[in-house]
Image (cartoon, rainbow, N blue to C red; front, side, top):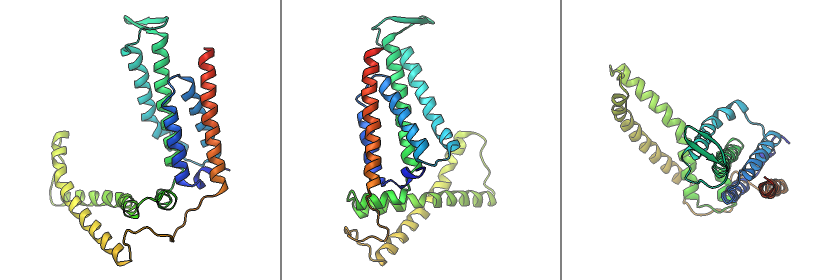
Length: 254
């Protein structure tokens, strides 16, 4: 049960997440995104095993962003319809502004929670393999994405090595931020030159192992569809539909 979302087919999960986000974009009341946010959070609690400390840190900038949307909509919103709830520093906060502000901030939080659910429960390599096998993504594009992803930690280590090598040769760190920004070109140029050489070697190695970019029917690491994938898709759709219906009813009531 706690690993169900981790074992779900990545392509199916990607489609479900995309459909849910598109559906949420058409609802402008505050209740629907709030109910969907709660539903997605409950699914993540009971069907995944994530590092909640990391989750909180990753949600922090989105929470600030949601508060920014909330505040700017209240202060700078153009709508003056509805009853004035209160006045602050000469600014009238109307009922319409309040609803728009809550709707935007809850939508940001719902999208962020859904995105983190996908990112923290999906293996990137398995996702790319699934895109090729289930969604028929071109192998040239899929392997390019996978190699680029694998190169990211290598580039980070190379950046650190070049920086340390330059310090050993007597290059001093600048005091001001704009001087450090200009100094970055001395680090980025050799790092990019090294990245091009690594990419060329990777391309030669793939060609030497018989990679032609043509679609294949057999894979070293097959990713299959199971009944659990369809069951979990149904659970996501139930959460989505219940959020939409519940939001509609609550919007009519309040």
